[in-house]
Amino acid sequence: MIPIAKPYLDKEEAESAYSVIMSGWVAQGPKVEEFEKKFCEYTGAEYAVAVSNCTNALHLSMIVSGISGGDEVICPSMSYIATANSVAYTGGIPVFAEVSPADYNLDPDNVRSLITVRTKAILVAHQIGMPADIDEFRKICRDNNLKLIEDAACAIGSEYKGEKIGVHSELVCFSFHPRKVMTTGEGGMITTNNKDYYERLKLLRQHAISISGKERHSSDKLTFEDHLETGYNYRMTDIQAAIGIKQLGKLDYIIKERRRIASLYISGLKDIDCIRLPLEPDNRKSNYQSFAIYLNEKSPLSRNEVMQKLLNEGISVRKGVMTSHRESAYRTKNELRLPVSEDLCDRSFMIPLYVPMDEKDIFHIINSLRKILKNII
Image (cartoon, rainbow, N blue to C red):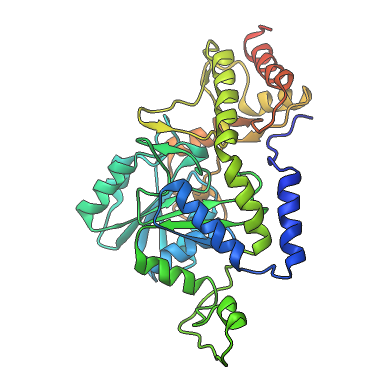
């Protein structure tokens, strides 16, 4: 079975993790600091704060943005449920907006229509690695005195107008889950150019303790800590950071390869008129965290029938990005309808894309889809 995804890990990551283990310092420490520094260098951001996962990164970003009980945050429903949950954790209300069928990202016009006196922020997700129109959302936020937060869980290494994702907003959150383009097993990162945010984020991720573990252990004077506010245990370990440093060094190669594989899919499938393939808008560059195919009304088979036939050919598949408003956690008596998001979710599916990927597997997937949808091999 060709897997849907596979992390690009080898002996270098194992040796780096082993070295940290043998050092005796495995919790948050010098390797986390090094990873944060290298992440800033890669993205161009002024500050970076490593945390235990992207959901926690989003939660902390909500807190430092001042989101609290009853505040509304406009976000996509078509995103993993963690996007909406990060708002709910603060007592805020996720207000679900429509997405554009072209890039699966928030529709700016629909977002504008949802702004109320209770709206405090817009949470933009760069879906499956494709950057949203950040400038448009920055303008909406400026015009309405709102905070802009980027859920870049899928978008490490993606580019908007020639710059890496991570520098365009005051709070940008990344994921290092194994399903993402680079991984630390679990893990996340927040980038910011706001020093006040940076200092508070560092505080909050470690129980808001006044003295870090590194400071306590390296001090030759008796010191006692204080806990300055309600904080959280959202720390990354040095073991994870050591893996992340190696992964970051390979990231440009990984993205180059993912884009090459995506281009093979596009060239091999573009003449099939019952599907829509990913489109890359001008001035945006995707890392192709996933490769989504949308089946239109001309398809001879349903989405689920196509997925089953691919499975029969030894090809792993996944359904389209979920819609959070149809999950039990957010379903209400007066059910919200988001026809574009629902249609994209119900008629799209993901095919395998990872590095390294055998050429024969790539062309087996292309030929299988052609056989299923066009009876052409």
